Length: 111
Image (spheres, rainbow, N blue to C red):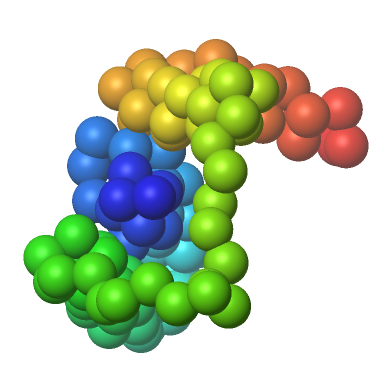
């Protein structure tokens, strides 16, 4: 969960950082620098909330479990799917070229 929240916050080296970087750069290249600045401010605000949630999840003592509290059962299938998702977020953060090339080809077919 921490990796996903860090990615949503746009902290490198995750795919969320690459996505935000390309969106901000395209706004600047389109002459909408003001929009990129506003988006950057809101990204910083959202990073505060995302990282605060991570802090609450991992840095505080868990409360006492009651009979009505739901429990997450980690099946092997769920573990494999989560591991693949985390690997994808980190791998595309380090090496985003396959996704960028795919997006570029998709845009070129629209023209």
